[in-house]
Length: 246
Ligand code: SF4
View 1 (cartoon, rainbow, N blue to C red):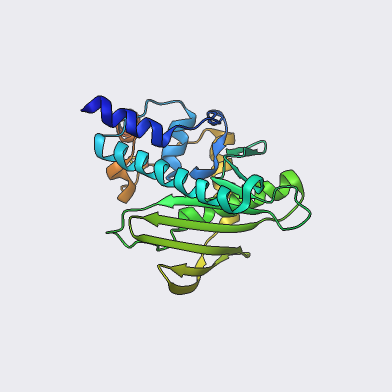
View 2: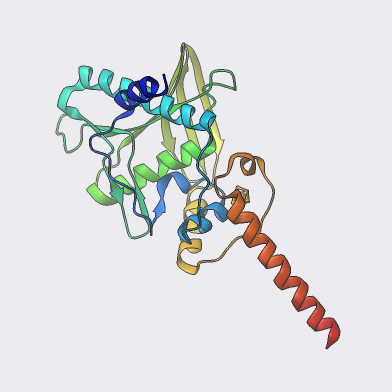
């Protein structure tokens, strides 16, 4: 049975044009992530494999994404692309889809697609997803000289949400609908600060201090993080003892 499931999942989630992200750059999806996890990833620390539940969620997400791609292709044909690489000297990332690249008939659109658990506040725009999209838009404009429109899609069984995203100085405006219900809201963010902070971590190799938060529960770097934190604690203890002895 396991082999059958594997075959089904592989056929649903196969990606022909998949290429790995650049290991030595910041990943766009990291802009709103824990700085310590980003520093550990750049330091090439070992990451725990996701457990079966998480793996199923991840593969389910890719299956949804493939479905949306097929729908977009049906509607826009060759005007839709998937996984286009965007980068600069610090960042590397691939938005899920982009439409009307180099087109004379329409403004390019970048779409980020997220599959969600319908039981937990489905369709609520998350700050880290908004920052991720804002950064894709910023990189696209830097690379191609055109400011793209930005869209965020959420999908789950029987649920959908589609939003237009507008990036202003410290505010991201979200407008659209969640399962037919209109939503218009402004989310306070610090896009430039978040970007500059992660670029500083990359440039200096600084390891931010451990600070317990929600993400720690499912963080793949939890073991490496605890090991590193323990090492820092030991160093502090030795220094303290030396100062006292002196
Ligand atoms: S365990 Fe928590 S603090 Fe440590 S890297 Fe992961 S999210 Fe960050």
